[in-house]
Amino acid sequence: MTFTRTTRTLDDGAPLRLSVLTVARDAPVWIRAEHGDGVAQVDTVTALARRAGAAAAVNGTFFDAEAPRDTGDPLGLYVAGGALLSEAANGRTALVLPARDKPAHITELSSLSRVTTDHGVSRPVDGTNRTPGRIFGCGGTGGDRLGGIGPPVTAPRPGQVCTDQDELVEFTTEWGVSTPVGVRGSVEALLDARSTVIGLRSPAGGPLPQDGRSLIGTGSAAHWLRENARTGHGLTVSATMADREGREVPIKGSSVLGAGPALVRSGRIMINAAANGVSAGASGTRAPRTVAGIRADGALLLVVLDGRRPGVSEGATLIEAAREVRALGAVEAMNLDGGGSSTMVVRDRVMNSPSDPGRTDEDRQREVSNAIVVVPEPHR
View (cartoon, rainbow, N blue to C red):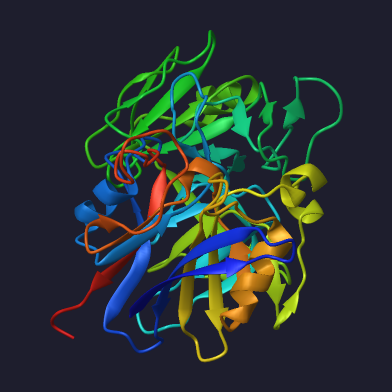
C-alpha cells in the first residue's frame, strides 16, 4: 500500500492537488465499508478509521444531511458486513468490495428485498433503515413521487427527495436502538432474532428488539402487516442485488457503496452522469472529488482531488477527475461523495485539505455517513 501526493496543472493552468492511495491486489489488508454507531449517524473519516483500526480511509457514499430524524442516511445502496443496510437507488453505480482475496469491481446495481410469511404470502420491502415515506435520491421500489404527485419516479434523482405514502420499511439493529415515530395509522411488526413476530404497535416507533428487527408499514403496507403479521409466526426478509446484466451479485461477505457516476470503463472515459441522475451543471463544475479506481492488475486506487482553494487546488469537473484517475492507470473508475466530504486519512492523519471551514485540516473534516477503510491483517 502506497500513498503519494502531487499537484497537477489542468488545461487552463489551474492547479489541482491529488492525494492517492494505491492498494495492491495482494496487499495483506481488508478493504471494507465502515459506519458509526448507526447507519444513519455521521462521524469524521478520522473517527471511522480509528473505529475500524484502519491504516487508511476515505469518505464513502452520498448521504441525506437534511433528513428530520435520520441525518446521515446513505443515498442508495449500502452494504456493510455482508448485510444490506440501505436499499439501492436502482441503476446507480456502485463500488463492490467482495469477500477477502477477491478483486473489487464497479458496476450499476439494483436491490430487491421481500418479506414472506410462514404461509408463503410475500410483499416487496420498499426500504431499509430510513424514515418511511422519505426517499432521498428517489429511484427505489414502489411509488416514489416528487412532491407526492405525478407518475412514479423510477430513475435516481440525487439531491431530491421523493415521497411514498404506502411503504414497508425494514429496520435492523444497525439503525440504532429505537425506530422513528410513525405517522398516524402506521403499524410496526417487531421480530426477534429468529424472525418470529413478537408483537405489533401502532403508531410505529419505539425500541427495537435486542438482536432482532422490525418492519414499519404505512398506508396499504400497514394494512398488509395487520393482515399477515401474526404473533408467534415468522416474517422472513430476504435481499438480493443484481448488476446491469441482471446477474446476481452476492451480498454475503461484501461491502458495497453506491455513489456515481461511473467515470472510466475498460480504460475509456465514459461518464454515465445522466443514468445516475447527475445534472450537467454538477458534472461540469470544478469541486473537490473523491474517486475510486481499479487498475488492470487489480490494485485499488482511492483518490482525493482537493478543491475550492484558489491558486492552490481548484478542484475538478467529472471529466477532469476521470482523466486524472485514468492517468494513474485506472481501467475502471467511479465518483464517490465529494465537496466538503472529500477526505483522506492515512495513519491517523488527514492527508488532504478538506474544503469546509476550520483552522486545520483535521478541523475541516465534515462528518460523513460512512467510509472506505483499509484494515491491516497482521496474522495473514
